[in-house]
Length: 159
View: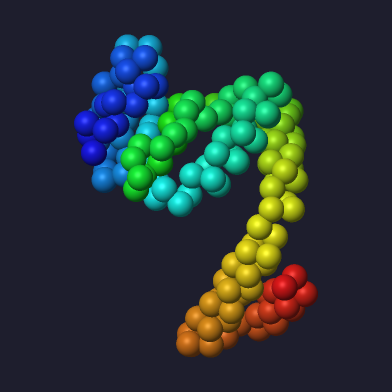
């Protein structure tokens, strides 16, 4: 698998060193840049390519949120390469935190709006499955709280 990853055009063009993190994740790096390559089953390529197109459309307004590359590795796997981001702790003022949260919220709203029409039935099916799973686990558990009915009402109203 390592040799297949090394032969990806993106890796060759940027002269990236490949280090394995796990079976399906690799770190790609050179002196200037660092990326994470993730492998997925070939069947997920259409979903990954839709997300890739969506993020590229948004890249004008949200330049920090991008995929670097996607592609098909062989007939069993496809891949996604994203920039490696280090989480730096910042001391933000309330105004800066609000501004950042507003931008992130706007991005998430636009992102979900783009995919809302697609797979709507599947989303509903997954949501109902998770509600049923939660209720089943609750039934098997021993703890009963006085305000549990509030959660159940919420789940039932939002099915």
